[in-house]
Amino acid sequence: MQKNKGLKLGVAALSALTLTFAGALPALADDAPLIETTTSVKNVTGLPQIVGENYTFTVAIETGILTHLIPTGTVSVSAEGIDLGEFTLGDDAQTVVTLRPLQAGIHNLDIGYSGDENFASSETAHSTVEFSPAASVTELWIDSDPDAQIPTVFYGGQAMTYIEVYSDCEASAETEAEFTHCAETYGVPSGTVHLKMVGANGEVVAEGTSEIVGSANANEWGVPGESLMPAEYGSLAIITLEVPDALLGTPDSWDFQATFIPDNWFAGSTSGPRSVLAAPAPVFIDLLVDENENTGGPIQMMALVGTENFFAAEIQGTISFFDGDTPIATNLPITEDSGALFDWVPTASGAHAFRAEFVPSSGNHLGAVSETVVVQVNLPEPKPVEPEKQDAESSTPKKEELANTGANGLAGMGLTAFA
Image (cartoon, rainbow, N blue to C red; front, side):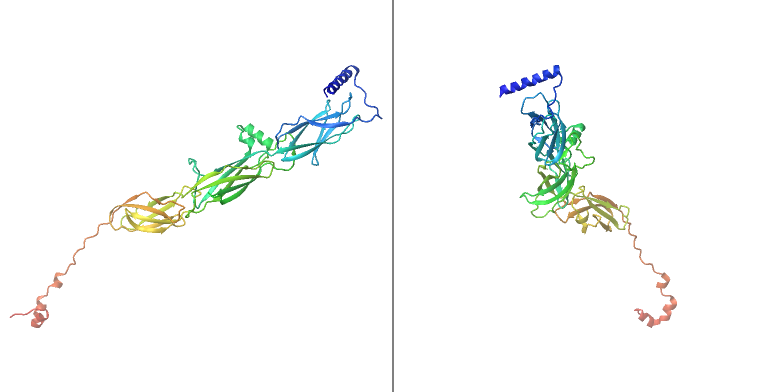
């Protein structure tokens, strides 16, 4: 084999030398048979080959005999009946083929030589190559207190989650230029995100789905160098799950996990399980007292209950009002406005320390006590009761009346007359 190879190289060098000094040699005669050729593939792009990346290889047209003639013409490439183009041979009877796969899996490439006036067309060469899907990364966040090491959701409320899916290339991008390169080369993931809230025993407590829009999977093969980044896309999904009520036996934690199911050339991916704590939602209660009506009339009080947690359950429970430690109204149901009204009629002057207390009707919330509001009550002083006055003239009998009464009159008055 080494001798034949050296001989071939020697003849090729001699042919080149002859071309240099004697000019181009003539083609074969018109009635001469065409020289047989074979098509070979070499210099294939290193593997693994990823969808979106350029797949490059060299096609060489070889002859079975020594000749000073060089094959010319074109090489055609197709895959599963899809025409991928024609590529012109160079002076060395070779051509570089660059393809852009947009579908993962095994592809069979058919490569054929067209032939020219001296060389016959070659039998189709078959090349099998496997393309791996572009890797994706799925990341999950849960709307919670940013200072909490473990996210917390509230019983009976909602868990707001944010799920982002992007290419593995983007995960390592640090600049805008690097990010753009990744999106143009591999495109943007597209498909469905499936979120599950899982209990300690693996049971699915709640689940939801959302779509993300990325690069379209219209063709199995793309144009080398053409950007795969769509003009508009959305790689962020927002999914809200309902959190169970706090009942006997309800767990105090769950695991959240998101799975990306692609509909383009990306591989699926799953976020790491994210542990989430469950707790009753804290609430606050504000007490408002109308201090202007403190001179004997009713004093109007209003207590409002609220929470700073937007995704907590609807507040339900009762409100009680106190004057010091003395209850003055108990277990008033919360209205639709999350509050309660109460009119209190004072019975004594002095400083009164009012407060309101909230008692939840379920374990979805914590109780709360308002700050104390002190009101000075000044009842008006009562007016003194004056004795009833009598008319002196009407109360003393006149002499004439006494004279006319006589003994009988005196007797009728309960008096005894003496002579």
